[in-house]
Image (spheres, rainbow, N blue to C red):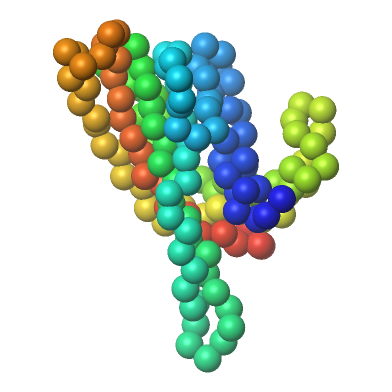
Length: 150
């Protein structure tokens, strides 16, 4: 797998670990398709940007943006999940090598870390006349750089 896909999977498994106390919450890889099962947290990458880190060298910084979408049954649930993720995103997320398998069968090897650069949470209002069942949404834009040494 490419490094970017390993980063995506690391964010997903990091969220699954953070929500282990909430077994009723689904952690979804990508934007939910089909019927939405509430509550859920979906992770989708948005932007990958490489830029020169230092003039005169060939070292590039790899900055990525993920959208973390929260779907909840109640306003309180949406707020709780959003604030939990925002607070937990202060830490570095370990990037693991999943080429040999996935937890719980295989314990992957750490190959670096995602260092938070910025995060923005936004409340998304749902028009109740446009959906069969009212639900509550928020999205978090999470930007991080990859570091081999973290």
